[in-house]
Image 1 (tube, rainbow, N blue to C red):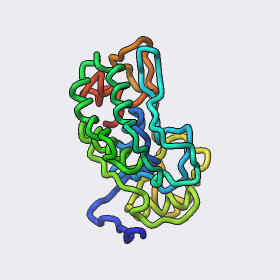
Image 2: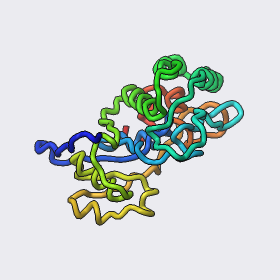
Image 3: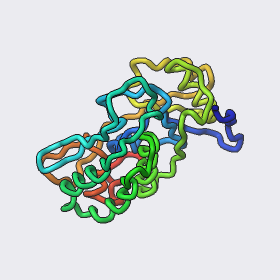
Image 4: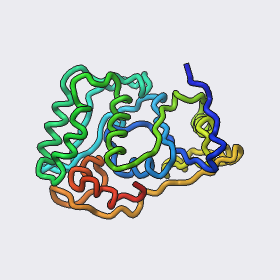
Length: 240
């Protein structure tokens, strides 16, 4: 059952919201979008997609970039929120691979202590719960205070733009911040009809940071940045 619709706080003049599916320890750009808004809604009541970012991400290893993937199966007939985590000790495998790749990094001890508890066997039942917990841990570490919510906490109508508009209205948003990929389908006028400004987030302009294992690459999990730079990671981000 959906929670009652939340009304906008009359004491708040403006409120920015972003809406995106949860990702597994996503890259720094995801956290920049999250940090740029007042509220970030995890859009996990939509269909799960395979070979995507929900259950995997890239890390940098001595052999180059490699996937860190949670084995959740290839069934597409489920929502993201319904994807169960495997009962085997996949977490230990991930921690071992992270250790192999980052134990030489300056902040390995600090950051591994931050994330290790989330990999305890059967601590989380679902992928969505794990992803959110890791997002919250990284946000707390970097001082990002954006509020996180699940989409199902709000009422909404079907259809890509309709759902986005309804979620923004229920959250009391005056500004919706979207990634650039949505330009292909987002009906901006539908937002404007309800007094909601649409802004496009940019992922351009990231500086390089000290990184292990050869040529620098941006497109890896934020864990790479955290292991190498610790809390100074925000110096290499745009909004955090």
